[in-house]
Length: 441
Ligand code: UDX
Image 1 (cartoon, rainbow, N blue to C red):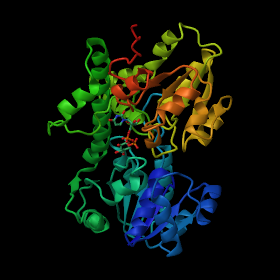
Image 2 (cartoon, rainbow, N blue to C red):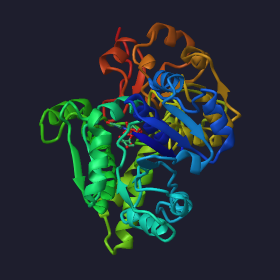
Image 3 (tube, protein in one colour):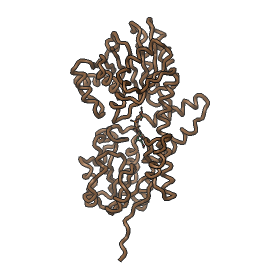
Image 4 (tube, helix red, strand yellow):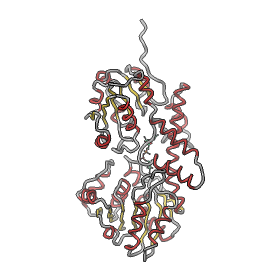
């Protein structure tokens, strides 16, 4: 099929590249000339494992092209994906100016029937708005379909190529046939393409992300309670996750969720609810608990240093909001680092991918080339991202480098017993505090 993807952000690039890989002819369109020039030279502006191989191959084999010219991009295409940003406006609702702007431009230039697909996460009713904007100026038939993405950063290629399900919102039989053809290569294993109306598809995306955010937040609160009653959240997770009604995934307590989706989507769904006169109380709690959770370790650190962080050096492992990405949007590490700086601490950091992004926002801290270099002469270590390389460190080396053997771990990376054996003071989330036992003579 011939496909156009408008918007070469994260979702657009993954969508365009993966559809090229399944044999389609894809043109990605973006108004950013510099970005398009880089893409044409074969440079990917984002870090996403596995994407580079597919990207290079499909450019080389001529299935993936880039342009700034909308008219050129949509020539003879059967489908047009809209993968445009929907940033939160001041009141928390998603701002549709980019999507509706492109819809306005598309109307007069459509030359034949085409299926226009909303891939961005958009509020209920957006497909209708996009339809209205196009129909006002179009001279041909078209359909607008809602087809939300469920891509996790870091594993987006796998999520795209082997989706658990594909959700398609359309009431048009003609569009349905096009969507079936488009997704057939991706659902060969029998995973379903679930058809529903446009509004339900739009709502499905928000419901999925909000539910996952709720699941994490629930575990974070269980963890907070575990600390008080003397229980271990790891055991609770195993104990409840084996119940197939609950499921094992997304039950890891930690320093709060971040990223470009969960915070934005939970906020937007809460706002949509209010717009329709419904107070979605669960979502309000999720947002409020998560805000607190992100700052949870700060008073603990402050108390450890008896309220005085002036001149203390805190080593930080992990800046990205999760591993396998350089994305720092809503990453818990950032507001913690800012608060520590405000309290007078010096910061030394290491992250395998995200340091360049943070340098632009927080220039006045020490960026290190290795995790161990960040520990050199530091008074304590704080961990914010569960990069695999942090999971099995050389504890002896860490002990020698750190001035004080104390770790504040927002991701529960280590077994309590290991920390005890290695003589660390170890704070984690929802588990007992590990303190070296004083030797009795
Ligand atoms: C999410 C959705 O998973 C994806 O389907 C959607 O389309 C986009 O948003 P993403 O934001 O890339 O993907 O990350 P995800 O892996 O879902 O993690 C989100 C946040 O939750 C991270 O901050 C992560 O650290 C946190 N998390 C996740 C936990 O704290 N505990 C968990 O058990 C799982």
